[in-house]
Length: 321
Image 1 (cartoon, rainbow, N blue to C red):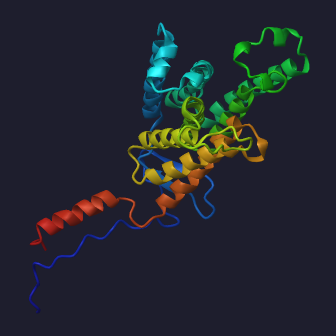
Image 2 (image 1 turned 90 degrees about the horizontal axis):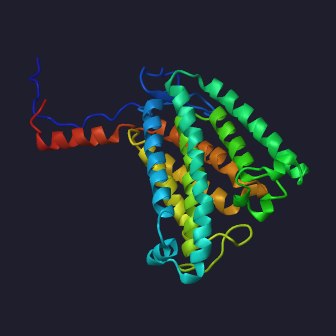
Image 3 (image 1 turned 180 degrees about the horizontal axis):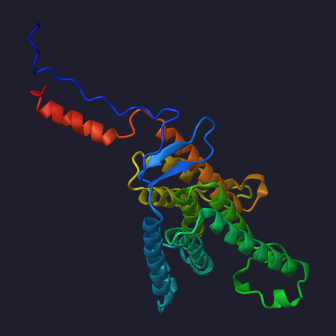
């Protein structure tokens, strides 16, 4: 009989790679769509109740910010104090008034998560979105087809329309269609984040671009040279921070956050195929995040923090078996 050797130390083995055929563990998780070989499962995804609380908190904070700005006695002086050049103050104030209406878009992901939280199936949410989208597109097509008609004369928030939107479909139609397709083909949590990219990221790009665009980098970007580096960086930062905060419980979340934020920023910047970015931003960014999450789920060490902590404990106390 050989004598048992004690005191030897070896680092704990990293967690096993997720293999094809592994079954999902019960608990909060979502299945990533679009995996070519097998469905990849990510645990610790945020539940609808968590996302609902997140969206409600975000909505209240945004509403309070809008109310605070609108109650300023001299908003232009406030913008000047924030560093906006005098020549840009008037345009910045108009852009803020126009873009803050986009905060109302938070009603879409909030309603989606509320319905899921009270027991609705995602397919029922998609059906509701389809009905709203069809009604919205029908009314907007009638407005464009009959400029002097009843619908055009009584169009809500007509003062916020750009000149280019008065003779064609509004961004709201593309927003509705983009949200509907994203909800239909993406996990609910990823769909929520991609819609936040459009609502918050696009708003940040517009406001920061108008306020400070061309001051640090004079090179004009985008298909028509109307985009700025400052606005694009602002959008990327907002999208990245939003994704990381939503998936706070998911390890290695920074990789999908980077992929999704980069995709959303590039789509907003270049508007591929000339399609309205209200349609393309949520769809393309959600596909990018699904791809990135599938790559993370397949990595060798999905619990890196716990593994490193165990190694550190073994190094401090090397006298174990």
